[in-house]
Length: 154
Image 1 (cartoon, rainbow, N blue to C red):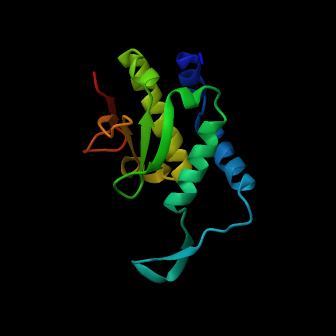
Image 2: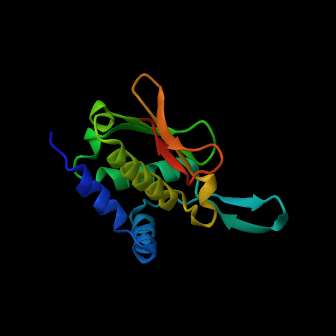
Image 3: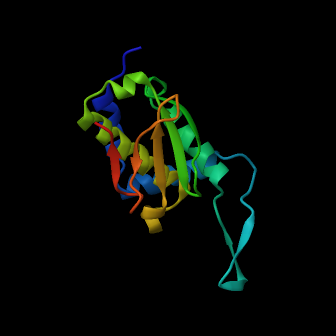
């Protein structure tokens, strides 16, 4: 299957803040009747807020990426990461064969989409991705110091 990686990167980069807000609204509207359980904030037991769970965010993320033609040629699996707020993406050999600049652009786009899915725009450095091979070797993702610092191996 042939996929235009520059086209995917361009598509992902088209989401300005207005579009991201519209996308979040659309994702919420397409969710089933399931509701997010309220959770008590530790600092104020009288204040109840709705929090998006990791499984809800992963579901939204997978649904969003599945709408992009050819994404399955680049990402073979998405699952919860090692820490809260982290998504682990298994990349394909086709992804690894691309020039580093293209992989970096795509990784940044994948991270931005994950931020939108988690609702983590207010604290982007806590939202992370981890890119791994099918053997589990890490080949990129968020840096330790901040989730927004994305890299890919040479």
